[in-house]
Image 1 (cartoon, rainbow, N blue to C red):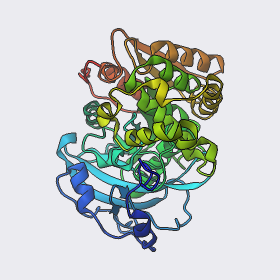
Image 2: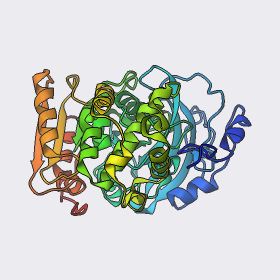
Image 3: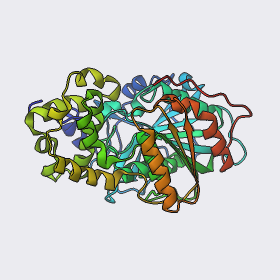
Length: 431
């Protein structure tokens, strides 16, 4: 990629388009509906005392937001589009939302996501809420799960369907910079955790019938995000976090770059490059951590191609790449960058203050079981009040999602949620 080209995740011409946005958002629904594949868009039906937010507008692959962004408390709705029932999710009603959150530096940021409501009337006390934290989909705006019919993975839509059928309303944040202006702060724990918590507040503004108990449940990158949600800088007002379920949570960020470089496995490069993008996005004014400064022109040019591809399509871009050439950094530099990543992204740097269930597949090749074993041991050593650990023999990274479904639902019920009378594990693949 030449320097004259737009950076990864950017929409050509979108800066000028966004500058023309003033006050309320422009109504542009068609592109969003086509992206999520829902059956029919229509205005949300709410009681008269609920203010109707503008619909979500898009510019290319990016959701538009007012510029400058008006001040808003964490979780305040900016925009929402009601897509009606989603046949892929047993008729659950689906919204795309944009809302205020706060990043780890205390800055007010817009975040996009999805709200899902089970069909039928809410139970007494309202639907408990699961705030679903997704795994790695990429860092380009096109990779935002709210723009994808299956949220980025067939396994994820199976998981979300099971939660809805069990009687939970579901919120699903895209995380900061993934779908909204700016670069996604990949694996920056506070950014992700706040976004996972704040979308619950946004959901309460959007629809009636939600209960006061909510849970953070996530996989991989989302497992890390769910653990950080327990420390959200602005917990949802009036709601109670019942517990956290972290499935194969990302961890050991301090060793990621060194491990990927030594692995000589091109497919692992996406995680390293996404992580470097997240590091650079934390402070765009720090030129020393830009991709060109870190990798040099040749490797950075290839890296931009990877970062413009979603995770499901990155294999062809990564094919044949040499991990040593793509990460031309000294061992000392890798260690120093890793220390910074670990400081903001390792999920076991502080005790989890609410009940937590951590789930791991023994055959996971993306998040090794030995890493999660150490995370659990460290969280317990730090004094976390209640950390349960469940492992699944021969289960891979995605396979463990389906294998653990019944244990997840049982945990949620124990801590104030609901669950069906019977439960059957899902088949979410063999990997």
